[in-house]
Length: 234
Image (cartoon, rainbow, N blue to C red):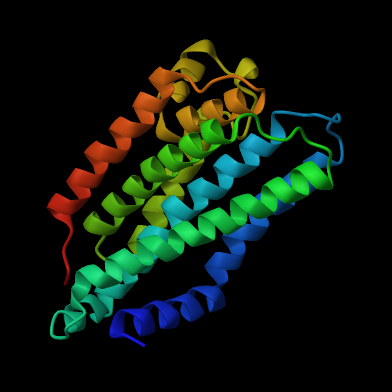
């Protein structure tokens, strides 16, 4: 087994034991099950909301907290003296957080469709494109938080502080049609809001909105570049 494979295996075991991983799976699943008991068969609203919540939690909570904690503990600095290099750790963490996202989304879709009677997603390609761009946008925010945060605790705090207003503007706490018009319009152009709306569009069988896909792409590219610019290995 290569050193990189060993690192991936160790990090996977650590991720599986991390309480935060369980938190990011159970919270959206709990919301889906609790509110799913009252949805009509073929519902197209609740499941996309649960998926957006899950991706947001991984991007704003798990990813930045893990990376900032590793830097705080000197793990990234020590890796610079080994053949693996710190960049390998970053790549492994991104991969594992992506796996966590895919597993969580798969579980939510399975429960929502097969147990609660929610409508299955529309075209598979549209769902995949939307989830990939939404995940990229949310992960880019997490990477920027990790780049700027002094330690794991502050990264955690910043992620939580960002999550709740973003979730509100995205329509995850209150239906968009019940929000003030101005806030609803602003929310549609936040990364989480564009993601939720795009998911709902494809869940109803429509095509994803090109402007919203462009919004998520812009966030992903611009914030990733900024994170790379400011990221510190120690």
